[in-house]
Image (tube, rainbow, N blue to C red; front, side, top):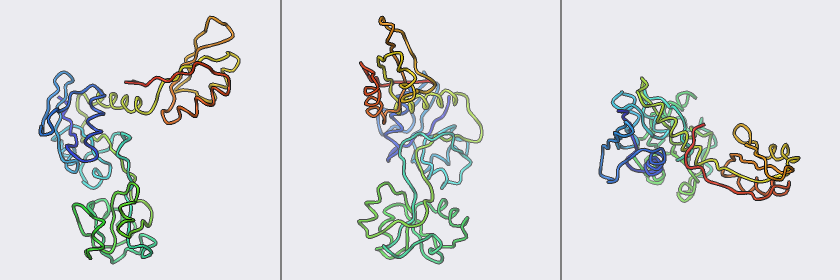
Length: 279
């Protein structure tokens, strides 16, 4: 069986479970379950702390896993990123008291609090900046006010939490992170199927099918508006002057494309969700 590490809690856990369910796998029903076998699909799920997943996969104890890119890099394990999964997107940034720091180089000799000492240490070492790293497991943004650090490095989504603490972001981003599929040193049987299924889920979440009727003479102009993954599917209608068109479009552009096609002359424009895909 393919042994898959899945986050057991936190921001990654819920969506990772949804992805696997949409990919056709049977996960846990009880949040207390730590190991769940899915013999029909030839896999076994191990529910672990997100921070530990890269270590288990990198050691070969488990075959593949879902974790954050930041956690993978920070772990220093032998696991490697196979593909981004498009959720839990965040940016890793430096922050300090408003107006105090303008660049990463100004951190030299300062105390820097973070939960990701491996990631941050490597980043600063690569730029020749030496700091005193203060490792914290959480609530990093409070470290400056409590006097244990001069600056922090942490995952930032909107920055609102930092601003409430009187902090501001400075310097270049350390990393743009998101959920990723990772694998160990050797590829295991069943990995290709898992990978294709997860890719199918991402496509289904990012795209929809659009159908519309159009005067045949306008087809080239319509294709310029929405060309599809390869090219649209075009079918004749009873009226030889018209055609029916089906095309895959990005979900976040539905209304813009509908408006443009309608203005061009398309009618009977319909949108259908995609539940699964293989491209």
